[in-house]
Image (cartoon, rainbow, N blue to C red):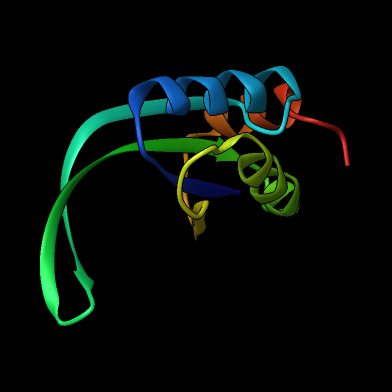
Length: 104
């Protein structure tokens, strides 16, 4: 199991990504965290920006499909997707993810 961490440029775009991933059963559930203050290097200066984060619970084997789908949907900037392994979770959540995501 993984937690897919998706960085979006707007709440609207994040919601579109979330609904698409849910409808395709690539993920079991998502949390959308809007207006996350972020900082990054641009050239030789640090800039401040706001991003929206989508956290999606899913199977590790679905990561490539998720990344490709985010690239297809995201209209601005570069799609930023990465995953974090989940080493422990409640049995109920594990079963829900197994039951409610694409069978692979």
